[in-house]
Image (tube, rainbow, N blue to C red; front, side, top):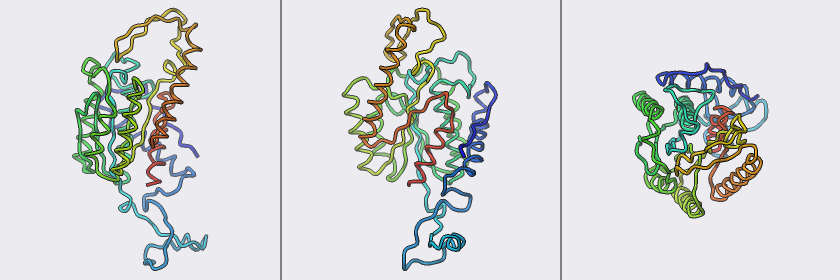
Length: 315
């Protein structure tokens, strides 16, 4: 059974980030426990096969009575992960622009969506005793923490997320240098850890693609896993729907380039082009060994939580 996303009021002050994210995480897990997924419970993380010669201390005899299969209970302590959340804060992530200082869970910008999704993930990390950290970057890493599980660390991470929510776009770097950031983290992140990236993946040319492959290979060589959420706004970025057919002046938040377009005339061509571009990007990333998912803002936050738990169950 697929968890049904809870309905939240229209807007919140930034101070409510922890409360909102906890409601999202709790609502998701209440449905997740009733879903067909297996291997997650309060008592143990998952089963694994019993191998001859092992101690029978942790054999699940109830399962054996039903299935005649010898399975070992694998407890959460045995499957702890070190998880690092990477959030792209370059200019394009501030789209759609939000004019007042409130968090809109139902209609956020890409940066707001990423931060609230990250905050919800932190509650899942805590429930599974996974250590976690936050990294903010644009052209370089400018805010970083170490993976921990303490209550003080939890408060530090939420303070950083709240600060990022209120950071004005004028302070954001125009572009992002994702390959350079991944190379840096390949050298500093713990082995066998999981990096969870939130980005709109604005790559300028083939050189960026090639550099990204090198960075991913660097992570793989150091045994660091990567889970990527490609953040997009469906209504305007996928469907090119601006609720008007009158001519528009579009401004690129990263380059500052301006272009006048007629949505009515450009919509069909744009939709074909953007789908082609996304398909190329995702095929390229999958070939490079990246676990990538298109995260449409309008589809809500549970898509992110679900993909994380799927990824974790494979570890």
